[in-house]
Length: 449
Ligand SMILES: Cc1cc2nc3c(=O)[nH]c(=O)nc-3n(C[C@H](O)[C@H](O)[C@H](O)COP(=O)(O)OP(=O)(O)OC[C@H]3O[C@@H](n4cnc5c(N)ncnc54)[C@H](O)[C@@H]3O)c2cc1C
Image 1 (cartoon, protein in one colour):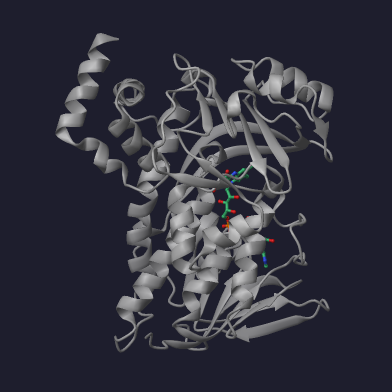
Image 2 (cartoon, rainbow, N blue to C red):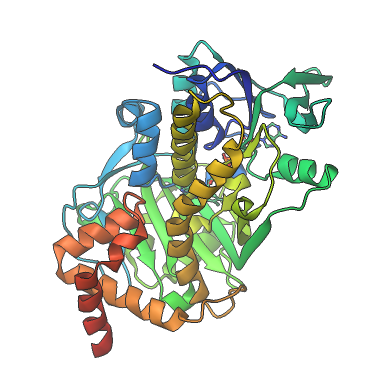
């Protein structure tokens, strides 16, 4: 049983942070309103507000688990909608220097492959089952409104579907707009300092094609990930199955070497990957639609947890807090984990006299711990690329050598392989890799190379 702690919560953005957040809030507020600037499709079509959705969107095991916590049987819903189960380690051909492919094993981790619009559509359908959640489309949030006594955020102003300005009272506004502009604008307008940011200039270019490939991937694999050397940026090509017998193929470049947007150029780019697997699979493919491109200049983490004060009644979530380098496939999963964290905090505070007092600070502190693993998993390999801009840790060489040796050990030892995959899928924190026996074995291997 839950206890209501407020009359109305408003979520800005019906993306992969906003939808799980709305579900988390629904147990603790009489009404939850989601404001979304787009018209939301009644199927799995694309929409303007999430241009990244045209690109490969892997949902990690940790994200699947978080979404299933919020929406019980979510994985079954995905499967029923056509998502393809991929046994990580067994069905996914992982190609990295020295391992083409990485040893094939069933690690007991099943990830579903599907388009990003299918994940969103499935989550939206689940929200429709909650009588106290309303999604208002074509509503663009403009700014958050302070209570007359200046003590808290009390409402949100937005432009509605008729183009008129409306104000909606809110005990809590969750900003899941992907950008954080409302939060930053509000801090500025009230004279409060912005959060410090850690920025890693990765300058990545994506090109993605959706294809029909009658033969699929040779060798009975369901999916392929091809990595280049760490100094050349790691992940260079990924190929996943999609619902409705389609495939999605993304090639990734950095700095002066970005993949082009025409089919001939895309194929030529795929042909230059370190291994021929993806090119061989797609060279006779049928193209469905245009090739989509996306430029991602930098990963940005905003340290809201370091602020001494934060307005009551306001909470940024998802990409508004941290935008991860997309090649590591973490953003949706971390957003869903943050929504679970929010629900847990509301549960713990529901019996208090003033549950919203200090909610943001408590959330930021725990979210910072949650973000630590995915941020480190992405940042350390990014720093191996000489052109990457940012503050490298002093022990970078040591960490890169450890990571390389860890993969070598994982190739030999199934238990280490499983542990590594669980960390990469955000099912376990990176700290499990600090186990003294494991560290000793990894360091022994590192010393030999
Ligand atoms: C190229 C690329 C590939 C990626 N690949 C992966 C991947 O493989 N796996 C993964 O987990 N993550 C991936 N991500 C990250 C992922 O897309 C995000 O982390 C995730 O969508 C969570 O973001 P969000 O909900 O905060 O923002 P979004 O999902 O972008 O949603 C923001 C929503 O807010 C709406 N909005 C914005 N402003 C307003 C406003 N003023 N009023 C009302 N509505 C508003 C937008 O229309 C949108 O619907 C990728 C990102 C990129 C750029």
